[in-house]
Length: 346
Image (cartoon, rainbow, N blue to C red; front, top):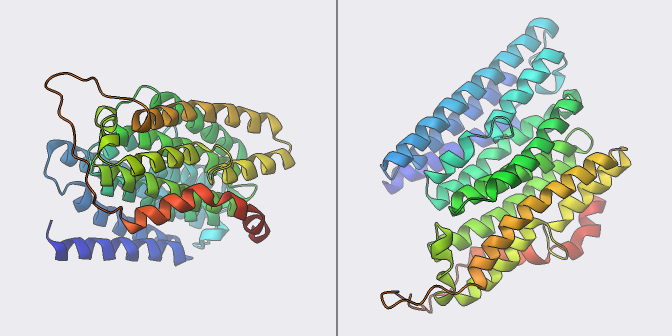
């Protein structure tokens, strides 16, 4: 892709996200979401591969339907209440339609089917963008309307997302699809707490972005797209494979790593809200995700490839690890001791 065109698309993404995040009026928020969608489409389809074109088409159709629902819910609310302010969403029907629209934008169950397919059709760099930056504006809209949303509906969707994200990721061999189902599972944890403690959802999203960026950039450095190539990557970059093991376990939410912090705080908040059974259910469902993270970690560090006569070994290169990968992986592993400070800010 032409570098100038790429700069234009990236600036458009930043502009669209900024407009949505900073707006108080529904039409401005909708405009920002549309700019985002149009800016990311060329980045998805830049390889001109049929899978990439298919992914871009699916992404466009889903995002267009979700944007139409956002506009429809805000117009319905304005019709009944006379308010276009985002924080004044009070009509029950509008709240339900908005929840469905934002769920489509994010990829929450039962609107999750497009996300793994789109991620599989793109590069790892664009996949990282879709898994993190493109989810920030919809999460912000949920944050601003959290006081009006239906708790039963969101809790049901969150538990289903945690269940299906873990369950459907078990049998995958493609790295990008595994990361897509990982994202769906994490979104379930964010959605379940947004009504009771919206700031905790944002904290979860920031830490999820940090850990997902570390994993995606590590895979990108290792040039890995499938489990079979991940099994031979240890010979090429042994230090990066070792760090990847810890980053994946952090993404799974195991103590004493960074990923344990949001899960711990969410379970604590759910218990305070007299939702202990819900906390137990979503904690047990996270074990499904733990299995495929362990599978990835096992493939990255412990397995040896079959030694046949025609098996090609990879050269071990002395190329230094990208500084951004080093910083992100370090933060993904060692942030848990800072939890008292983070909890005091919350």
